[in-house]
Image 1 (spheres, rainbow, N blue to C red):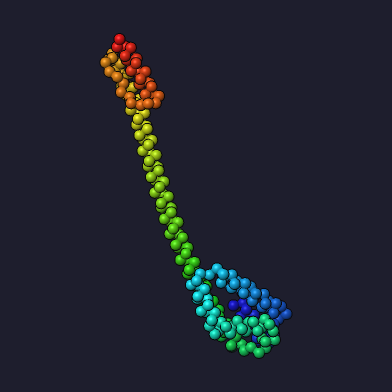
Image 2: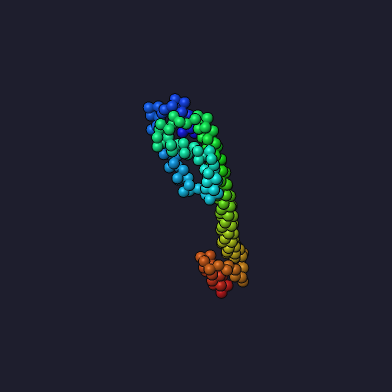
Amino acid sequence: AKIRSLVNLSILSNTFTERGFAEFAYIKGQFEIKLLKFRESASPELTRLYERNAASESVQQTYNMMDSIFRNSAFLKSMHYDQWWIHSTATINAFNEIEEFSLNEIKKRAELELRNIERSIIVNIIVALLVITLLTALVIFTIRGIVDSISGIRLAAERMMKGEVNFRANVNSRDELGELATAFNQMIEVSRQ
């Protein structure tokens, strides 16, 4: 669109302004560099659309006129404003179609990536909930074992306080509480004798 405007003004005045040709050459060069990068990175579908649009008569005419101006700025004097306007507008429309297709393609890829991320987050949440559930069950099981062992020793102590000596503290633990229950049972055994 910048080239079209610049060439429009130049056609109407039959020459470029003082810096007009340099600006034209710069914009044309930038366009060609971007076009090269685009063609290197475009998907096959986007490349086919570009090739189809670039092969149109208007786009080819626009390219030819730009190349002719670039090689010889005096070519500008032989150009017809209406012809330039029609072909350059059709070229801009062709590139707008390519840009819209490209944006839709990017949107589809982004939506796919978003769905993959959402799935990954859901899986991670499920795994985290399972781990939390397992850890909670393990903590409950461990606490219950400790509480049961302490309750068994407390009940044995209460029975011993009442004078009973014909029983054993039933604690099936292999930790310090198990050792305490074993010592308590030995104390009951000594009291019995």
